[in-house]
Length: 232
Ligand SMILES: O=C(CO)[C@H](O)[C@H](O)COP(=O)(O)O
Image: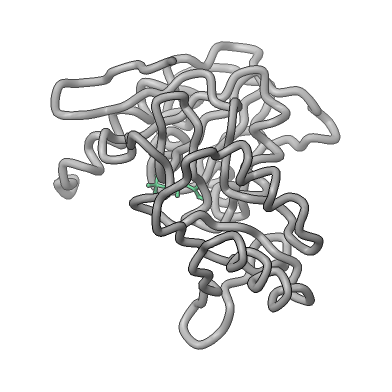
């Protein structure tokens, strides 16, 4: 007997399964990170067991790599396949232009690298992730070189954010790239994501932001009325 899942997880699963249906024989696929992306990875694993033949999959995190390997998904990397056919990943917030906040799972740097290598980036989510303006529900995560954490925090605070070092218990959360994450709350929301992203990228020691602008081409949302595809 399988355990019942809550409605939000069921919606995430619907989105993940629908995205897996988009994968065709011969594709190179990018695998996202997080609970919704995991549903996609599981559905992709099932399709591969049923005969789908992808060339390989590039993972955006160690966690997803382990999951994909356990499901028999053939793994590859960006050295072997620098261009992917499709990247599928979740998001924390999705605005009407498909700009995203990502990184609640701490994988934003690899996620952005893999997403940027893909011809098509499909976001999978449930309707709670849709927002009119970014930054009201989730803080914006940024990945920072540990050596620079204090000056970078101060500079982000000067841009109007409340800045918090992400912790795992009493110690800083460490990314797959051995960096720290700062969670940045902008009390008025993020009115101009592109401008903020450019300002943040000017801070030396800041490696990457969780703002994904003009990267996603489509969102697949599972919800109470079934699966809906959303593109601006
Ligand atoms: O960006 C991410 C991880 O870094 C995730 O994709 C994002 O946090 C959404 O996660 P979930 O599908 O569990 O809600």
